[in-house]
Length: 211
Image (cartoon, rainbow, N blue to C red; front, top):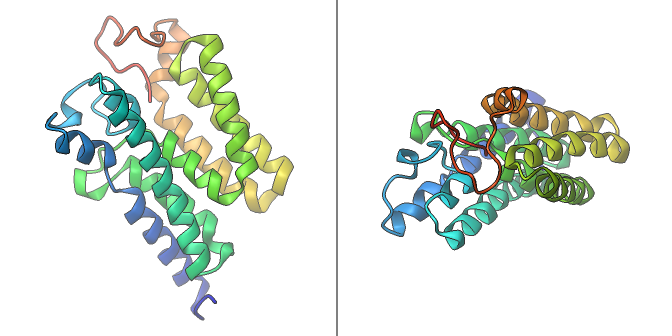
């Protein structure tokens, strides 16, 4: 049963719990434990699974993807259990914010796709299922990683509206929009036709490809 407290305090606590769990930099921790140094020194400089994959270690990348998603789901489940399900959406937003801007790393995190998907799983699994399906299909057809991620975010917001109306749509759409904004560099390259395809690596200017 959720403890009695002022709504503003419950909302703040939900966001902070999500932020703290979301800010665990699994990509950085795993690569350092494997003796690969600082993941932020290669590729895009992000701590997410896409950049971990650039080390060539697929197992570490898969583990990072799984753990980044899991921390988002755990944040939502924990807050729903401790404070009540009404605050779960705020915890979800906090988890994605924590991944993208971990305070322990000077706010330099990832782009939030895996963590966002984890929160969708905990908020409403059909939203997660639709997002993953769209991500895989869009990435396969376009051969561009960022197209898959961006398509998944749009699809998740639409599914949230159909499935749960405003109570579910608001947190999911807020997260999806934020992840899309985090991909601003990818969007610019997509519009200019310079976004590399999967397996191509960096573009001619040396900027990151996605995720």
